[in-house]
Length: 417
Image (cartoon, rainbow, N blue to C red):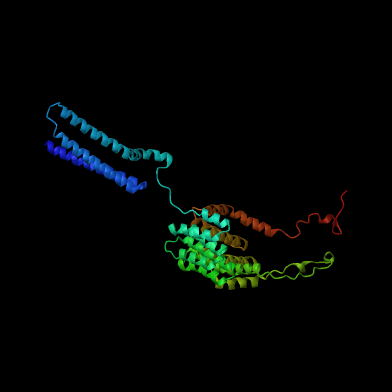
């Protein structure tokens, strides 16, 4: 029975020791200690413990039973000394690790623990070389960083920017960005930013076709998304941006017209004003533009205002604004803006109160947890005053401000006194 108990205790001690060693290995690996040195410590410790255990068991058999002879005392001292030496060696090897294992949960609350810092690229050396007028060396330094961090967006954009702006190598910059964007793991926002920057570079060089191709990649890769909608609107406005940039690069002399003589003696100077574009022609131009770019929200809003204020056609204005409101890819703030604009047109163009309330109520129903819903509630609360203010402003008669007209002689006020 006693032998069985010794075997059980030996097995339990071995399991406990292996468990402690396993935990220690886990934490040491997490802390990124030198693996070779750690394995050497384990081998030396296991060998020393095994040697001491064997020596103690071997010598204990030679002790005389019940005798206190010189040989027994010397053997006992030798066994004790071997245990002490082994313990000292183990303490030297493992005290720091054991104390870290036991105390680190408490100290980590104060100093953040022993977690190694996150590895990330550093581009300060590259920027310093760029500032010293050494773009080639700066590009080489960026490439060295990207070898270890190939998907770092900051480094990719910095490399492409130096290629395009410092080295005048736009094809190289395009290859850099395309390589990044073609990766399936590239985040959508970063792909959009890269394509937008590439379009700007092409546009500065006057290459409108290449400038349109860059945002088209966003549409093809993320169809029916908010990013695709923004890219479509950018393509719609590229023609205007192209004209502005080309005008900056190709400035032509402007012939100045001769000024008007004796302008102070003229009865009217209305002919000097720049003639405004007729609403009909402007609306036709907007309609033609929307046929080619149906998702241009800015132009569609302008067309709705022309229909409402210039032609008094609430039905046509409502139709244009409804296309903007019902587009699911628009942001809530934009949709709320167009609903408020539609409500304003309804108030000014004679719609009934219930129609306006229904329009503003859509903001509250669609975005109940956003600030735009609170603003819509406030406008609903003072909607009656808005209608009354409009009626009062329309009932004011022309000339009502001339209260003292009877006191005038020859168009001038009579002198008092």
